[in-house]
Image 1: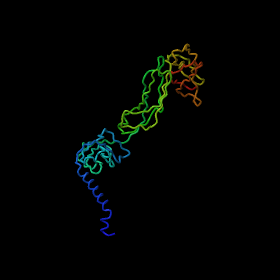
Image 2: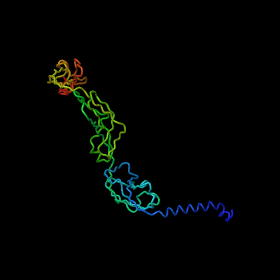
Image 3: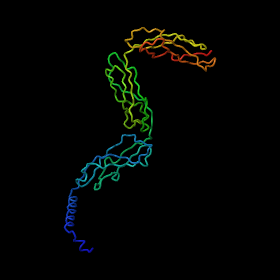
Image 4: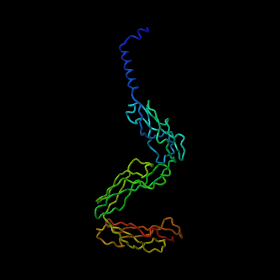
Length: 303
């Protein structure tokens, strides 16, 4: 192919292409250069897996840039400050921020960054089991009461900066409304901790069971103690604290209950030990419950 043919074949198309390229260049080069102040996020690279940022650092910086008008029509999209923590160690670090730390599109010039440095406090990652505390609101219906509240699981693991982990003592659930309830409430709810720097190592909700019963009365009964052969004790009777609904119509009597001490199978003669009394209800009135035994253990001697 000779030079003449290369230059003049499809000459019209080539001239049009040249004109369009010139117009594009002219349009771009004629755009005025403007300065803008953008608020951009701080991003971290290569954070060591055993370290956590424990302080409330500056999460957004003001970056002043110059560019041709229209080059940032998308605002601060694709602009951020990158901080490499590859060589980070435990303790306080003051990190200067320069132009080179700003990720930006082509054609954008960074003039300065404010603030020009940020302070980070790095700590080792800590873990701790804390109790789950259910949160209730409202009151049961008239004549009813909350007897017990239980969460399953009762403890969850929290993770985060070690000093913050050591301060946390509980995780709380979402609020459970028991207003005017006449029956027990069973809910699956999410949990959280007050410190936003801490993470909960649990995705699924916890189960909270709120036992709601008729309001109850409590009565103390003194019941004679039956001691098995081969045991000796100075205790003659045990106190039972028994609860029952206020609507319960019967009178409670000590004879409704039996309390005894059984001799352990492997007990050695002459040994002294403490044994829990065993309670049996001779009659089973509906909704009667033994809430407490005093004493919980009785000192005996094996004969």
